[in-house]
Image (cartoon, rainbow, N blue to C red; front, side, top):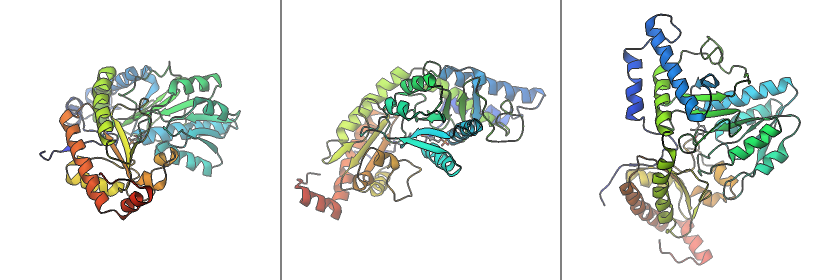
Length: 399
Ligand SMILES: *Cc1c(COP(=O)(O)O)cnc(C)c1O
């Protein structure tokens, strides 16, 4: 088969869509005004911001005044968690509940708060990567100020029972935040039905530019500022607004949420073919739940290969993929997500994440399924580890 370029790392970032790009362009060139200025050029920018705010709100079942633009998913997570912590502290509530397999934007923020006198309960996940809502219920205490649980995991794609957790938090009168960066556009979200109080999203995971995102804050909740300065975002988030990116975010989120069921059907078909094909490689396992899974996420562990070598060899063949999450690459520790579902270090090291989307084609899937087994065969042939595994466990070396 001819060499192709296949981008299968959409959980790391996505291409900016033509539609979002075209919507943004005039705000770089003609309508470059500052949205806080009173002349027409500024007002054009301000109007564009409000239009985008309405689009983001509509995608979540929220009201426009509940949407605050930020620099992305990480800032939104920081703001939500630190803000609720500060509010909680004033009432003597210094306990936070999260899960063991959050994105680092949540995990490291919680660890930071632990250093500042907060207590954090890390809810475990089962071997499929799912949280039991009962565990959240049992962890809630009188001094709990926040529950923060990732909507869909960025590495293994598992989708959590967010509505159930939301109902529990509402009943117990504890604020509930979710990092929905990976879920937006893949799962239908309704913040009121799901009893979500705060929700983080990011532009660059849904075909808008990097460096822009939003935090939904349910009306009635007032968070202290994370960024102090001017009166932008109704005084709650200072800094001249990134108007072109915000305009793109409004367009991109509308497109992403326009027909989720159709996208899910199309993409999950390709995903399932990819999973089935990869599992034909012997001593390979799927990470994460087969059903409660993002339509574009594939994560497998292939014994006897090393994730980094696999990625380099896939790159030589034109395939962009990831091992664990992009943020963890460059570190020798296996991903905390893979360890949290009980994988031993050795197996976690040989993991491969392919994240496809609606731009992926059947030919791309064919190509991946042709290249990966070849690369695995080559790497295993050179691997003393694989040789030892085969001897010790009496595995017939097919691939
Ligand atoms: C990418 C990602 C983030 C970080 O978003 P940025 O916009 O890159 O800061 C946070 N949470 C999850 C689940 C993500 O996938």
